[in-house]
Length: 278
Length: 172
Image 1 (cartoon, rainbow over the protein chains, first blue to last red):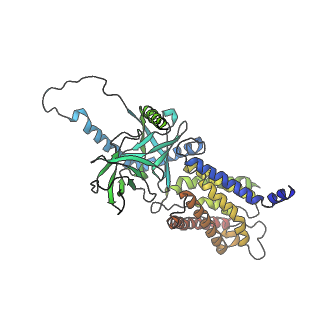
Image 2: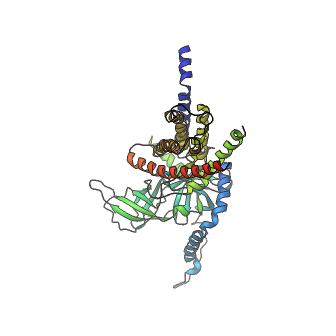
Image 3: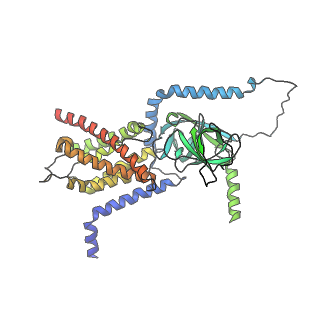
């Protein structure tokens, strides 16, 4: 026993080091779980507050791009407005019925912290569960998917960016509706990869890739990326595709959190199915 | 006394804020990012208790982690640096040991000593950090390349800050 104590005493510095490393790695592994909230991240009061102050200071730098994006979005919305359509023939009858029900609600949020240079990138938003944000909600930018909410505190939320090596977003080709998964390779913040597209599908460079809507996180058909290059490696059944992201992740300032009213229903149904399989 | 209880905490806060608010927004070529904040660990007095330095390193890394949502990554790299530092200081010690109360800066021990010390520390810290970040050895040279690139960038920043701070020390 005494030998043990002298042994520990002698190497106490080393044991302290091992203990601290163990604690650090415990935190890393805990953080790698996709869901789950923790206090120690940028959604806490101090870090979130400092980031808010800082982004208030630097906001004007991006104003030009933000205005550009907003006016583009406005143009799109205006194009789809009823007033921009002209009646070609016949008489229209408006029937009020219950066929349509609201499925998606959008909440505006400001990006107060963002990174693109790491292997696993996160964003911090200026809204939290006081504004109705919940874990697992989707986040979209002016042009396409941005990420999925990971941690929520009262006034801030932390988002796993598309530029995260573990993030997989279900997408499909706009033209042919073949679906695959969008996954980042950690290299360039403007490019991302597309997997699981079988090599008999006809592709051209510049094809639009939209969200598939299978995940019930994002609305279907949201343009997200353009195909930049593709090749069919020999002996494999799937293409290797590089896509150009439509969002400029360096300049994200305002984004929307997507609330799907039916997501609980879909989740319950699907978990019931998995249980039935067991 | 005042230096210990006022200057160091203040320096700690300044280093963390400067890192997360300014340097983290600087990226050369998309992925290269300088990590200047470890200069705080490098500058800690030589005669301080090893365990205390280890604890401070952990706190420093953790503070950076809280801001960047990289829980534990910087903490583990900083603890590693804090652990290696006393051995490195022994290794680099002048033949007759360090003078009492000499600070591990370019002003205190000369530029050639400081450059050796900083280069090794930055290299160890960055390599550890980048390998923890990818959490795999499969892309070994890719990761090492990115670590080395950031290495150079950080080292340049550290030297710049050291030049400015030793100038102000001289004036005092």
